[in-house]
Amino acid sequence: MPSLHRYESGLPSDLLSTWRAIFERQRAFAEHAFDQLDDARFFTPPSEPSRERELAHAGATTGGTPAPPQSGMPVPPKSAMNSVGVITRHMGANMLSRWTDFLTADGEKPSRDRDAELAPFPEPMTPDQQREARAQVMETWGAGWSTLFAALDGLSEDDLSRTVTIRSAPHTVHGAIARQLDHYAFHVGQINLIARQLVGTDRWRWFTLPPGGTREFNERMRRQYSGTEP
Image (cartoon, rainbow, N blue to C red; front, side, top):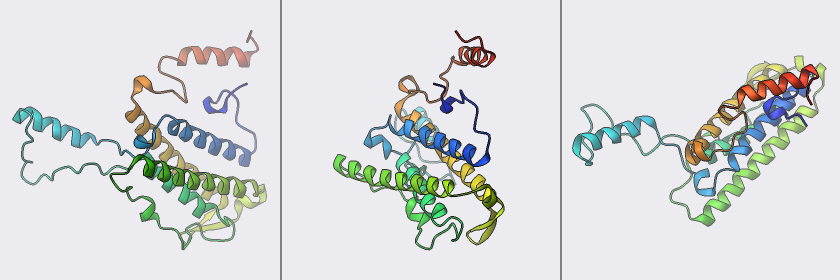
């Protein structure tokens, strides 16, 4: 059966169904990455290239002893990057805010605390604490997607030209949906890059085409749609 995950089949012809299919793909793409992360890696921020270069330079110039920073250059922090857990919590909470009462209430709900969504998880956490925290994050993630799909499925073509607000700024419905597609695509890409860095490319299971697989895939698609598939 053709897979939408690799766009092996065409997208639906109507706009609302197309958006739904792309949202479904984004969710599946992220969850493919989650499945490859244990609890510890789920909460591990990625390393920062600038910090790695600084540490490598320190080791090279001092025989392994960190050198003092150059004048005016701050010492790099441990990591200012978000973990997969933080990004996932943020996405779920964003969905709950944006898609609850989508047509009738502002997309930025008074109860939302974006800064708290993006705050790092406490360190260190025991394995039990990691397991519990991950379960809570995934509950928010699942509730967010359920809210999104319920709102999307409740729309008609006539709704697309209506106006909704996000942080009081007016958007057409179709513009607000495009904004969310853009936002989630950015974060799903982050999730996959971070997860692959933590897992290692040699152990990574590919959601899209693996390296070296493009030619064979293109040929199979050509045969499938030209009617020459055996």
